[in-house]
Length: 101
Image 1 (cartoon, rainbow, N blue to C red):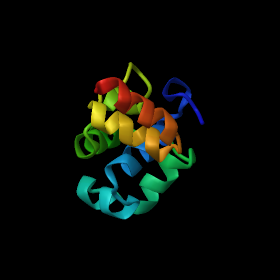
Image 2 (image 1 turned 90 degrees about the vertical axis):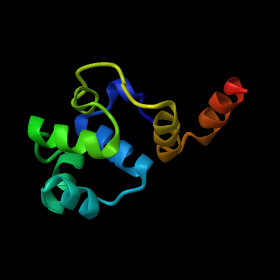
Image 3 (image 1 turned 60 degrees about the vertical axis):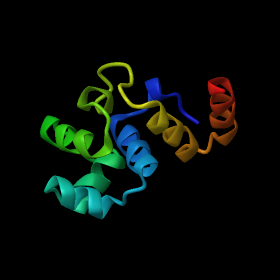
Image 4 (image 1 turned 180 degrees about the vertical axis):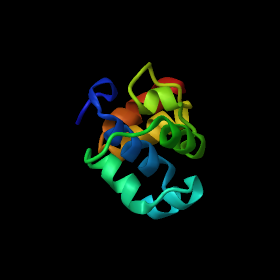
């Protein structure tokens, strides 16, 4: 699995979207974009615009800067754990939860 620092904006979008449990079509509708735009960004076929990053960030509870890879993550602990789980890193999530207790 990739470290968040090495993820492309599309990979960050996919991970955050999956962590929230929302599909491409529903996210696109909420942000007034098409499903194909979201899919093309996630697949690296087109670059994420600042307008899309801002709209998506609001819906996914992350910063636009994080989506674009411009800074460190600004997401809640719960969302960060969900992203880790969505990436298939369940053991790491369990360890992080154990440190909270």
